[in-house]
Amino acid sequence: MKKFLFLFLILSTPVLGQKRLNEVLHSLDTLIQKRDYYNNKREFRINSLKELLAEATDDENIYNLYRSIAREYIPYTSDSALLYSSKSIETAVKLNDESKIINSQLQLARIYIIKGMYCEANSLLNDISRRRLTKKQRIAYLQNRVELNRYKEVSFSKLKTLPDYSKLRAAFQDSLLMIIDKNTPRYYATKADRLMDAGNYEKMKEVMLESLSKQKIEDRSYGYSAYTLAMAYGRLGDFDNKAYYLAKSAMSDILNGVRENASLRELAFLLFKSGDLKRAYKYIKIAMEDALFSKAKLRRYEVLQILPLIDREYNDMRNKMSRNMLIFELVMSFMIIILFVALIYILKQKKKLEAANNKNEHINRQLIELNEKLRKSNEDVLTANKKLESFTNAQKEYIVHYLKLSSEYIGKIDDFRKSLYKKAISENKDDIIKDLRSKEFINTELKLFYEDFDKAFLDLYPNFIEQFNDLLKDDEKIVLKQDELLNSELRVFALIRLGITESEQIAKFLRYSVTTIYNYRVKMRNKAKIPRDEFKEAVKRIGK
Picture 1 (tube, one colour):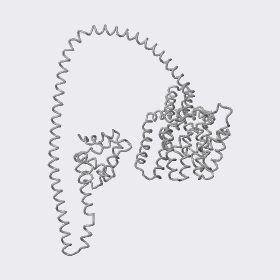
Picture 2 (tube, rainbow, N blue to C red):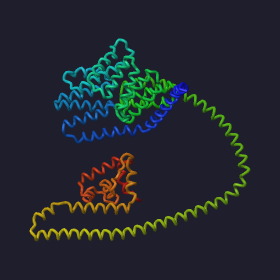
Picture 3 (cartoon, rainbow, N blue to C red):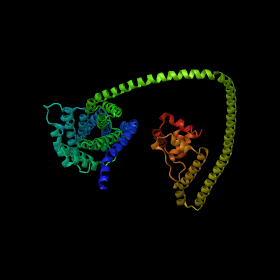
Picture 4 (spheres, rainbow, N blue to C red):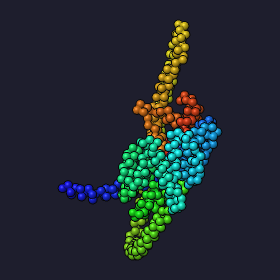
């Protein structure tokens, strides 16, 4: 019995692995359709930083913003990253801060490497004195040295006269492993690289599985870690798992808006070799688009090594399908001709009957249309009457309500006046000053007033919150607390719905500053899933 069970597990393992691979490829295809959304999220972060930069006046703040913008651009488009990193160096020099200069130089060296400017990167790194580096700077320095030699190793692999870049890379990796924290993804990936150099692929796989267990697919480091694990499975000959983790790596890159990537290209080539030409062609085209957009020289070179092969095979497949479709169309055309002749014969037989029926059907259709129009007109009249009656009743109800409310406020103010008068007679000056300083009476009345406003407004527009949320992106919808009818943001747009559109008027009504009201309005427009300049008019149409 145990032998049969063991045999079943051996036979079922490839099937289960293929099922898991198909599921992750389907997830990747779904995510690819949303690439623009995640790229736009990165561009939104960049634009937000640029807006802060436009308002910044302090040089240190400007320096930090230049560095942050460059950091956002590095995995996205290296030309822009180069521009802002260069500006950060200029600002650091202006501040005369050596540490900041070094940080920016290390960032710029990373960008040079991505762009294939290896001489510039090497020269810049040579100019940095390693003795003055902090631990964090030494780690960044060594990472740059590792990546520089890795890129040279790939780019110049066919030139035998150049230095052995793999040995140089390994030497810098050994130095990096001595100082980097052992629980970081970079440590695990570096250790895995050294294990791959030593041919210990099983241990390399174990190291990267441990690393991935501590990361989420939304983490920026997940993409590189999953790619490294895929390489381990590839060296072990397990191509299903290699494809699986390449797909996971590509998904992580998309989620993070990363366009300087390698996983999709590698996955396309693997699928090409396994016969999945349709997916391979789609993935390699996207990889080429990303490589061109990011201006990453090595990625462009790697894609161009594979693209012609996949493109040729894909076009051959399409040509073969076209020939088969041509044969199918000829057969179908012949069948259609036969059916057409048969239909003509049948139509001639039915022509007399149809001529008689057509006249009756025409009259019946006219009667039906007239009855339908009459029914709709009656329904419209009833609906209009009900709305008019409801509006009239609401007008009467709210006139009485606000007369009563105004009377109550006058009474409360009079009570407050009498209280102050009594205290004035008793010459209790401290109590009078205390009462005048206290905002408790005003805050209490404001709270009651806003509650009354919320109830009255929602009586008029009971679906306002739901329809307002429909104008917002799915992840930006407003969720009220349990005891809230409206919150401050909703009250701003409730007033806009009532026709009060000027920020100054809204600010007086809600007792906020004009700036606060403006920020609320801008914030909501940024959350809208419709064009920003259409948002106010869309709010004014709620309930119509």
